[in-house]
Amino acid sequence: MSHVSRWDTHPHSQGVHPHSRSSRRRLSKLSYDPEPEKNDEDVIGFATLPDQVHRKAVRRGFDFTLMVVGESGLGKSTLVSSLFLTDLYKDKKTPDVEDKISKTVEIEKKYMEIEEKGVKLRLTIVDTPGFNDAVNANECWKPVAGYIDQQFEQYFKDESGLNRRNIKDHRVHCCLYFISPYGHGLRQVDIEFMKQLHHKVNIVPIIAKADTLTTKEIHNLKLKILEEVEKHKIEIYEFPECDSDEDEEFKQQDTDLKSAIPFAVIGSNTVLEVNGKKVRGRMYPWGIVEVDNPIHCDFGKLRQMLISTHMQDLKDVTRDIHYENFRAINLADKMKKDQKDRNKLKRDSSPNFDQIVATDSILAEKDEEIRRMQEMLAKMQEQLNVNKKSAINGHGLHNL
Image 1 (tube, one colour):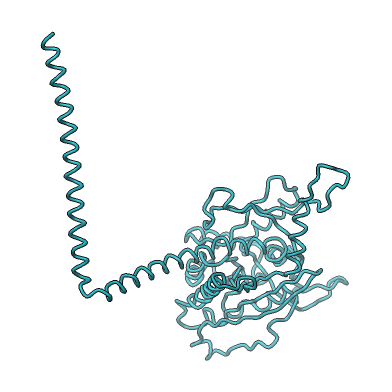
Image 2 (cartoon, rainbow, N blue to C red):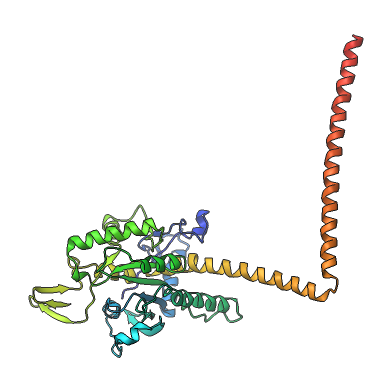
């Protein structure tokens, strides 16, 4: 997994609300010369700041939390293992039919640390076994929303505590939502889940098991899903805009990623040999489907977006929008609770609290009545002055 640095224009600097999706981010490749020109006397040397930040960030390492949501049998475990080239679910047990009937949504976490070219990534995979498996799955989104809020709450407590140097970030940065390829678009459970969680987490829709569909069927299903997403005003993860001065190749890559939403993917950890070359794929009687072949599926584009180009932006949106919205709501609720507690304390500490409240109300009404009378007197005085001036002018004209 390669570390790609990205420098964004912070929403505060643009004069827009930082907690709104309308505050657009910018996607650009990092380009700087860390070595100042030694022969130039005008060079101060602060051009090395990005290099200093880079070294410090690499030394500290990076955290990323990925959530996968979807019903059983859509290949969630296989896809995650394919993304990170590891078998996280080798001990996984498949529940039988009787267990699925009454099964509730569970939250399972897997931790792993990956290192590539000296860059360390502490990865947390949050799985949701049991999602939409029960007979009554109307509220299967609630445990997922509850878990996301718990991570926000824990981070808020840590951030408000005394020891803020070693805060562990377990906030969910991205949710891969798996959509069944066997339907004709989004089902009610899909719509309800995304509507309930799109203000809490970055949702990236995935069409699972794309090898069960033809190219035309995939195209039509993508259009149908995007149409229903717009119809129900669901806000899926929105790619940031490219800087205008980027090269054409980079712009084309970004355009290809945006046009691939929702990603139609295939997962497999099986290594096959095709024309003397080893590839990951699935073998069928009619041929082999290659996981990394862009003609066969969007797996490569999903991995590029999730890991190589947009991982930091997913974290930025989580921090600047989803967490800040949670924090604002949390603080507002806390202020309301504190106000209720103060009123309760005042009521409990005063035996004649009701009389005091009634007296305060009467005094407020009297003050309002006095204010109205003063306004009436001021208007009457003003009218008298106007009449007096008119009378004087008229008398002068009469004498002339």
